Length: 584
Image (cartoon, rainbow, N blue to C red; front, side, top):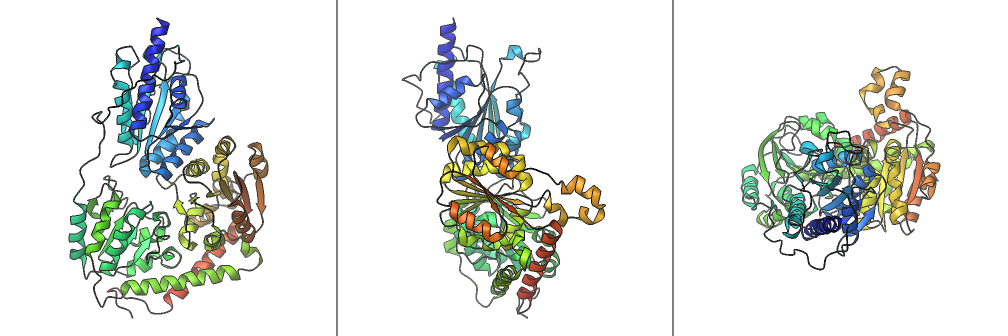
């Protein structure tokens, strides 16, 4: 009987992995455990799936997120039963909100052990709630089910659903009875999966026709085009041509990757255009591709401007309820042929004035940062103002939330590697692990995080030791929650109360923390040290942590205001369009 059970289990898990592979899964991240033994062994013995081990489930999930984010294909994620599965939740939430394809495989105890006090047994069915695109619980293997291709169809459906027109995480719960060891991979497995079902690829929407009609309807009106906070490179020709046809300014969020495309885009608007400036423009309409941008000033300033949203996510990513029309596209790449249909109208110069002002702001930022005295070289924004000239050898840059991604938005230009962020849920957890996953897919990656993000994901450094991944981690250490110095809590609360609840100073020794995981460490005293370390590490093997002790929070706040004010004066000091787009 035990031999028969092992044969059933062996056939089931190998079929499941075969179906996942046929559906596009080429990598799996496995956290160790007993109940997940059948899945771990089946993946390890599959010739077409690359396996990564990670000891910490939470960090493992973000590592898988990074792999899938960079490769844009589904990645499998495996854990044992119990609280191990609960540790996947933050990354599942991020994957759901950022449309990143993950296949979460949670091993489970058999049904008879649920709700009877058995150890390491929790309710795992629908554990991730509405954050997954699809949930399915596998049946317990028996000889009949493991020979009819059922598990192959489950795997295929899970993988194709994760990578469908609305990509995201799916959850497959797999209960197993003991014994948990499996035999060798069968010589014959189901391979005819074309009719397996579950591929939710929909027919293309009428997005091309809709955009062509839209461009004609908007001609002569006063508006802006916005490339939002997700990778829009596939749509770059269509977006830039659309803006050019209307002669509207094109504002490119740094995570859109349009700033690296060579397109005529605005890159420093957050540094010199306030919310009031945008309101004074009295725009008729805005056309946004993808999710909302990072810039708070932009979002607030356009808060009452009607929005035409062009998005591959059909769930109306519009927190301000501005959308008057949604054009849903299954893949931004289908918009490229539309670009050839448009020609720019003559005699409209609004966009040119915006771009000229943005160029003046960029020059003013560079000059202001270069002239900061003494400790000004420890101004956090200075890193991003100069970073683009020091990234030779890097394939990707991942920038963490709170201050780093905002400074990227305000001050950076000329970043040629692909730029990634974690803006689905905009949390500070798992950022390093996300970056290690990107490096596993693309190669040398720069990760810039704050000190609290670094502390939150220390176990993520295990991936550096386990997989010798080429990652340079720059930790912008402002001794706690630096972003709160920019918010109303700073002035509204007594110093002692603010520091305890928001400033959150800590005594973490980053050198010792990196050393505990065998990761080399560098200390930087000013921005020049950071840039030199980033350049030096481009050709170094493995990972490195670079700690940059930046200025006191109040000094950093002062310098932010100073640099932005100089950028604003330079940008607005010359010709500027009035509310009708005319240069005055």
